[in-house]
Length: 116
Length: 109
Image (tube, rainbow over all chains, first blue to last red; front, side, top):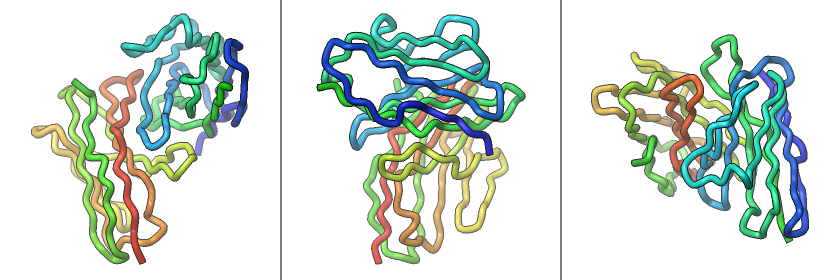
């Protein structure tokens, strides 16, 4: 099956700093990538939909200035958590769909962010 | 209103039992439906797509009811390895992909 690589898998940062998470589709091109956040024992919450070459679409309640998304190519989307705070500590997962029409989404391995 | 509603459980069932999960969705124009499985601290993995006519994969059966806007997953002859969180996913459009809250299943020896 298709592979989506997410990096880093784990990061610890100081409060006030910014963290960038990368999501790459390794063997297919993804016009659309999705970014999710998951708190312990809760479900995946869609944060934003990233569209190649255009602005991301953010879900209600997600601060676009805090969670910067860039989807500059068909194989790479990045999520930058700016001025991170402890409450941003969470599991962030990206997913991507193959632009050729595959209906399922493939997931990255996730990034566990801890802000201290 | 949430795009997808799912009973979070938890479901604790003995080995060999049959268990069913349901999910309802709000957008009647939704076109694609899936069940994903998520193990603790791992990313979700596709279990099966859900087709209009219903589909089966071994011990797993998925069904879609468009009139009532729900999808279901039936697991027969539960195994210990089936213990996980099961997530229903609804995709109203190509660029929309929404998860239910997930249903936790624990299969007990």
